[in-house]
Length: 267
Image (cartoon, rainbow, N blue to C red; front, side, top):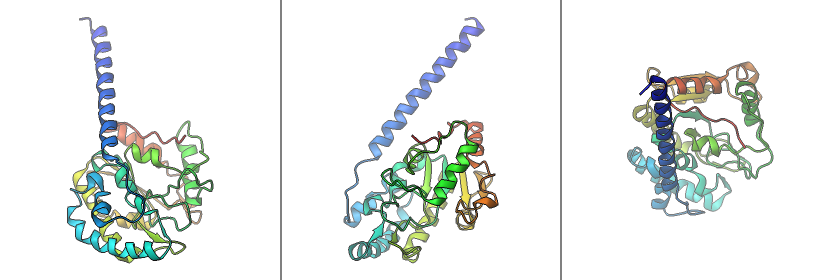
C-alpha cells in the first residue's frame, strides 16, 4: 500500500475508533445518570445518589449518615439549598473515571433558584448571573477563541465533558453562608479530593482563591497539573484572575496528554 494511502486509512480508522469510544462513553453516562427522586428521601436513596462514586467513597458511609440526619432536619424545618435531589449533582454528571478537570468552589449559593449542586453554576431558568460567574465568563471571552457570553449560568455542559464542579460544602441554609460547614461536608469533600488524587492521573485542578488552594494542598503535583490564581469574586478578580488564561492552559495540557480538550462554549 502506498504510504500516502496508508496514512489516510489510518486517519479514518483512528477517527472511527474515537467516534465509537465517544458513543460508548455517552452510553455509560446515560446508564449511570438515572432519574433521582425529588424531595427528601430515605438514607439509602440519598447514598445511592453518588452513583459510580459509591465504591470509591465507601469509607464515608458513616459520615454521610451523620450528614444526612443533620440536613434532613434542616430541609424539613428551614429553607435550604440546593434542592435535595441536586445535592450530589456533580457526582451524578461526572463519573470519577471520566474526570479531566476539577474546579473547587466553597458552599452553595444562598439565594432562591441559584444553587444546583455544581460550583459556580445556576439553573438555566435563572436570568441573573452571579458576579463571580460573570467574571469567569469575562476571562473565557478573552482566553477561548469563539467563546460568546451566554445569557444563562448553567454549567451542566462542562460537567458532562468531565469538569468536576465540586463545592467544599454541599448544602446551605437560605441566606446564611457557611451555615452547614460543620455538619461533616468538609471531611467528606476532603476524602473526595484524596480519592480523585489517588485514582486518577493527568487531571487539571483549577484552584481559585486560598480556600480552594488549601483544600487541594495534598494533590500530587507530579501526577496532576495545578493552576492557581485569585478567586473570580469582584473583590479579587482584578488581582490576577483576568490574566490567568486558565482555560486555554487547561486545554493545552489535556491535548499534550492525549485527551480531548474541553469545549468551554455554552449554548
